[in-house]
Length: 364
Image (cartoon, rainbow, N blue to C red; front, side):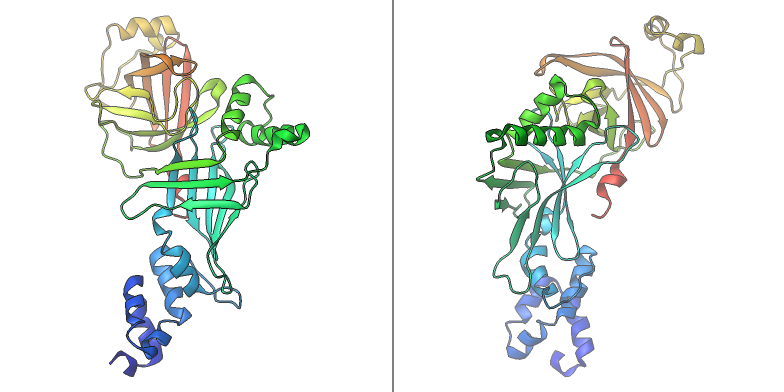
């Protein structure tokens, strides 16, 4: 009966079916098989399912691209947190472009007010004449054309990239130095090379054969504070700008800032600061905010107020290598829905944070 409808209506009907059902319809007979080859169907599906506009050309088939790349890799789309980069971790974004999937490394900004740097990592594509999908390696630190992607299975939240036969830059000192300088320029701007940056480069360089990721959760429970949870970037002194997830921690009541990226003192996955669920907004007289001794004296016998402002918290500190971790007193200060600060009182140090959830999720 479907074949009796006008061609335009046939395409419209099939475009409303899920992709697996269209594949089933195509096996009914030759007429249905030919109908299901119509590129318009797959153009519509790509827009409906992934909000991407594809274009049919002599080299590119939306049908082939949807069936062999978009649908099989649909679970890979989104934000991923690297699990095997010791201390630091990193964030990868997988999104759909007009004729390929793009894997990008998201480098936190050098300055808090700046934007993330997007470094192209991999392209996954298949053109009309290709027999299989192709993976193009765009990494400058892991030069190789042998790349294997182990995509997440149904219900899974893990993704792995394996790169074999990587070019060894250490065989040429000038190449090694240039790769190191390029890396430091990206992650730290014009800062001179120091031990912290050198350690970060070495850890990154020697883990470039295997990239193991877990899906970054972008749904949050409500938190007992007048600020929305989400992803923020914050300043961590000599370690630079890092990414934290402001959320409710199931292991302790209250609100936590959990590190998405980290450093050798407090690595990724660890709690950076914690505000207890019973904490109230502090009412701190102006004179007690003029210096740290006055602030410490106030916190020994605090008074409270019921509005957005400042809360007592605890901040995690540790020796290099996350040795002897402990929590010290701090203040959590809300400026508005997108900005807050954490005061490490004993260290006389303050870290500023701004919300970046919209920036990270744009295009997903």
